[in-house]
Image (cartoon, rainbow, N blue to C red):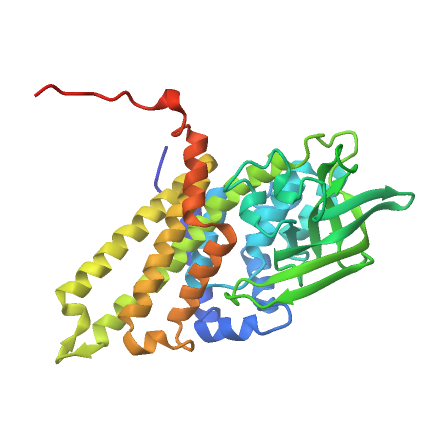
Length: 402
C-alpha cells in the first residue's frame, strides 16, 4: 500500500480548497442554507461542470472520472472544511453507487451520465429513521428489521398494470426536499413473504409525492420527510435479476464506502475548527499575553492535533479498504465532537454565541453523530464483525508464578 497522495488527488484538494476559500466562507454558507434548495445552485453547477465532483467515483463510460473512494474522500474532506452545503454526499456517495450496482443497463445509461454532469441530484430514502441502521453501520441488515420487517410502517410497494405504486413515508432524508431523483427502499409481497426492494421515484413526474424540509440542528445538512401516497415508481433493477434477499447487500456495501467518505468529511471539519481555534488563541490576549502562549492551552491544542491526525489516517485507510469504514467513522466523529467542543471553549465568551462560526462546526458534530452514529454503536458493530466477542477467539489467560 502506497500511503502517499497522487498528483491527481493533490490537485483535487488544491483546486477545491482555493475555490471554497473564495465561495464557501461562513457568511456564504449561512446564505446558502436559507435558500429553497439549501445550497448554492450556482456553486454546485461549477463544482459539477468544472471539477466533475458528482462523477469522481463513476466509471468513464457513464461520464465519470473513473476514480475511486479515495478521490471522493479527498473532495469530501475539503467540503467538510468549509461545511459546504451541497447534494454531494447524497448524490455521489449514496444514490449513484446503488444505481451502478443494482440498476439495469438502461437505468445506468439514462441516469448516471446526468448525475456525473451535475444535471440530476439524487438521494436515498430509507424507512426506520436511521440511515446508520439501514446502511449496516450499527447492525445487521439482512433480516430487514431496520425497515419494519414488512409487518407495519415503512414504505409498502405493490405492482399494478401501470407499474409500481408506493405508500408510506421516510424521515431524515438527506436533501430529500430538492433531489431530482429519490431512491426508496420499500416492502413488496406482503408479510410473511415480504422482501425489501429499491425503487426510483422521479420528483418531476411522480404522482402522490410530498416532500417537506425538516428543521434540523445542522442547517448545512438539509433533511426532509418524504411522503408517498400511491406514488408511481420504477423498480431499480429487473424483476428477474433482483436478489430475493433484498437490497441489504448493496446497501451494506454502499454503507461501508459512505462511512469512509463521511469520516474524511468529519476530519475536514475537525481540522478546520482546530485551525480557526489556533489562529484565535494567537491574537486573544489575557494578562498581557496571547492565550496561546499558556502551556495549558498548548497541551489542549496538541492533544486535538494528534486526535485529528489519527482520525485522518483512519479515514484514508478506510477509503483504501472500505471494510474499516465503520471504525474510521467512529474515530472521526469522536474527533470532530471533541475538537469542536474545545473550539467553543477556547474561543471564550464569543464562542458560546450562536452567531459565531464555531457553533456551525459544533452543530455539524452533534448532528452527524445523531444521524450516522452513535460512536459506541459503530465501534460495537465493528467489534462484532471482527469477532472480538466470539469466545473461541479470546486470548487464553496466562498466569505467571511468582
